[in-house]
Image 1 (cartoon, rainbow, N blue to C red):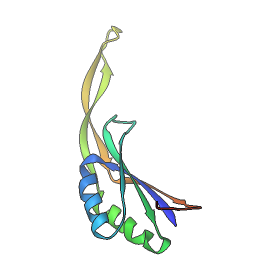
Image 2 (cartoon, rainbow, N blue to C red):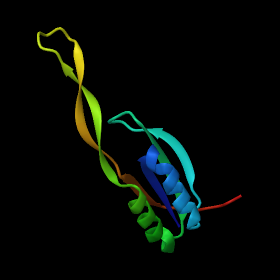
Image 3 (spheres, helix red, strand yellow):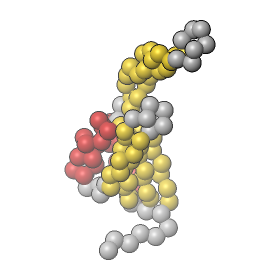
Length: 109
């Protein structure tokens, strides 16, 4: 048995959970926050038999696509006043960060 930990964007999570559950995967959803954009994301936990890992990974890859987004980044004003003005930058968001861990023991009670 394996534990899949998938960190995805909030906007992908509902569709991803639906697809996984339709294919028979049990999913636990955790609300989490990312570090770079400090935006909300979702962490999913899936306990998966080894022969079903590839199927889960294909679903995650199909749903969680990378895309461009405009974010604001602070820029210091000239003159050394310590004032920062936000300016837009384009960043790539989305996709998924996935960890697959071995599970030594599993009990469903």
